Image: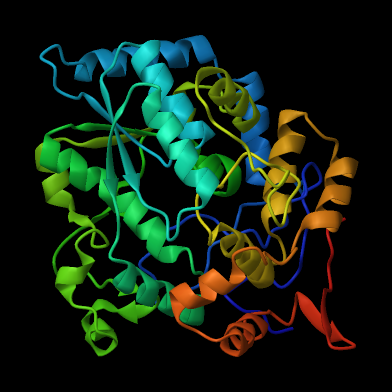
Length: 398
């Protein structure tokens, strides 16, 4: 049967969590329109790499040793002259609050927090960003040109069915640019995405792969929304408009000796525990609606009005969305059973994010008719079938 995006034809569900082998993994974002999308690894035992990593970190990692490695790293970069000595990128969500707070108040560092603004702030997202800085942090907020960002978002939606791509590109590139500008060679992010949906091999290093935020030369081909950078002029976007979207050159990063580390390498990462930590140590608030659209949880990805579309388009393309991600994590962390996870996925996954839909359409400058045309064309025939004018998954979570 025909598949889209280079996805595996046979759908296999992990025996331990609710992720399937259709789950995309993280990769450099400057992709061509027809690029094959890498997916999470699965072993012959039917267990996904994310569950295998969880087993490994639960039984093999000595977190006291990892913390000692963190302290050694921080001592290497620690400054005593009043200058910032570490950058913590983040939105003001539970995880960025946790990372910045422990670096400053537990380990005595002097962090500069850096935020790449979301497409469109939600009220709760802005409140939580302010709650973050009020715990005692300087912050640089880099806000995109909304006209340029809106066009890039539309292109990413129409060509890649991924309206979140412009945010991800800017998120990866902003902190290194600020680090270069302010001479702060250490950057500490939160969780390594490899732990949740990449190859287990990528969890072996605390460092973010430089390919995610650099380019080798000026001659490298860059694509934005699936469009070559050289062709963006026809959409009214010049190279000068792309300052925060274009990765730094690798030799610039190497000359400045900038390193990007993941806190999750040194700390036993738990989103649920970080929620409790953020509640205890800041004025962080969860979703006032009680839960987020498309899932049963209430405390993650709250800052952007387009967040729901990010997960919904993922569900359309890969047959799994926000509830699958949340339930898989909660199963691994022991908060729900696999049986309960299946029930939660069937109840919430793929729920349409209607709350900000009109604003998202306005931001991308497309009609509702065009939106649904893109969505329906994105469905892979090995995952979806239409019954009585309604799309249904051929392989629901089981």
